[in-house]
Image (tube, rainbow, N blue to C red; front, side, top):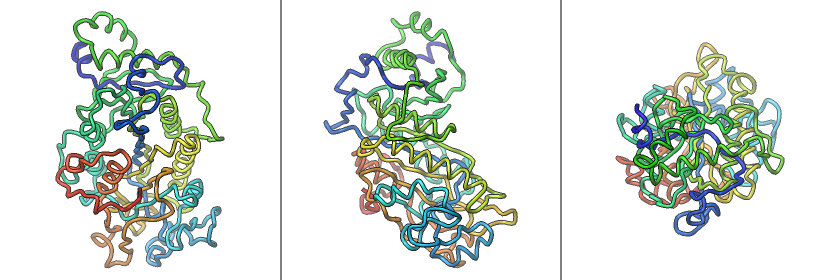
Amino acid sequence: MNRRFFLKSGGVALASVGAMPVVPSFLQRAALAQGVGQGGGRRKVLIAIFQRGAVDGLNMVVPHGEGAYYSLRPTLAIARPKGAGATTGEAAIDLDGFFGLHPALAPFKPLWDTKRLAIVHAAGSPDSTRSHFDAQDYMESATPGRKGTPDGWLNRYLQTRPDAKASPFRAVSMTPNMPRALYGPAPAVAISNLADFSIRAGAYSRHVQGGFEAIYDESVRDVLGGTGRETFEAVNFLKRVNPAQYRPENGAQYPRTPFGNSLLQIAQMIKAGVGLEVAFADVGGWDTHSNQGGARGQLSNLLRQFGAGLSALTTDLGARMDDVIILTMSEFGRTARENGTRGTDHGHANAMFVIGNGVRGGKVYGDWPGLKQGDLHEGRDLALTTDFRDVFGELAQKHLGNSNLKSLFPGHNASAAKFKGML
């Protein structure tokens, strides 16, 4: 990849932002620093969180009112709640008398009680693949069963809502490489860490460290212009910031993990008014084939950092959550029946979380298919009753203001009639 191609390709992945001291020209345009979105209203933000590896949704959001759940999982099942409103110990945290949260997700209970947390259960992809690679590709492209879709659904959202005044930070992934969901012609950046200013060229792996300014100086007249010039300005702008200056608000305490750090940095960007509209982060480790654990153990440890991180993010953002929605997803669920190594294998439907001040929370959405043998998908998995694209579509239309569902989800008969009413 030569210098000229790198500069013209535009898919630059950056690495830092924090409390913004000086506002350069790319942030001064069109009241961008004031968070004004298209149509003159306040800018809305969608934060998409991918739980890579296929989280066990049946132990994450526990159907404790389903007797078959306990017969299918003699060692892994989470105990029934000790009483209404129970929030500690080894038992599920009751939500509505039928569903409960894994005890490690206790930080989510206040969000549920204040109706800022909605859950969609038995949701996912209609494609039955049990391949992590294929299922993640299908979910991020939002074209189940179709390999080769050139762009991700979040990039298509950006394409169908072009904004000539957009910031270079309109779409940001807190990952080392660009996720599939943001692949495509619309500009997006991947930021690995605010304190580590590595620069990547889109999906290419070659690092360009040091000497970027020299490349710019040599090429500015014949190569860089428009977006390229502003991207360089953005890089230098971020380099002037010390991420250590950032202090979370409202007593928020992020887990000291890569996932917690990603969420903290998303909060930084939202507060800094850099024009963020779509943020993406992921957290792995959910492929619990053996020794998964029940109320304690491998899954519990992962859920603890997951719940603590998202709770810290909502606490830190405070009233800004009026304009923010957090959506969680995983490529597929796990088998309803535990296996011989006290784990679970690749399954089908799963649970999704939707968090925000504007969410009609305090409810588990979607039809529950049941866990009796005759109700299971292929005799082994939680059956699907909600297509993940209908969850994506409701957030795209009602939160982000994009009604072009046919372009967002090609090949899917998307319509508002399929929305769950979460917003």
